[in-house]
Image 1 (tube, helix red, strand yellow):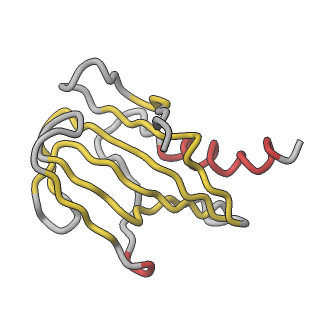
Image 2 (cartoon, rainbow, N blue to C red):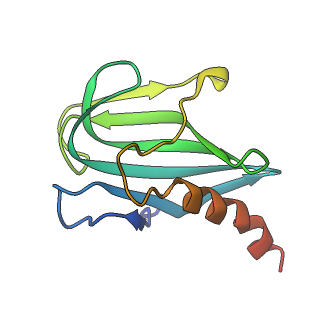
Length: 127
């Protein structure tokens, strides 16, 4: 399997004390009006997961509904340390209970740009 390429949507990957969001454009799968892609985030400070446990960074798989313009986490691997280090725990969210991609406290927040870019992929591919 090849190396994953990451595109920084917000932040600075060279500084673990900065909130950083990256997406893997080459991981996008197009399924009609749904996009599935890999994402990873480093938070500047410790955070709490949707189920109440601490984390500092994560890798995840995101489902993007292009009709609704919404992105939701399907799978996440939470790390206690910055930049995807330390003890890790994986969570698979059921289809009807996937938490929204929100990036709370990030300004500017990259969610809308990520959704727009992912949903434009089929347009770019069909030309």
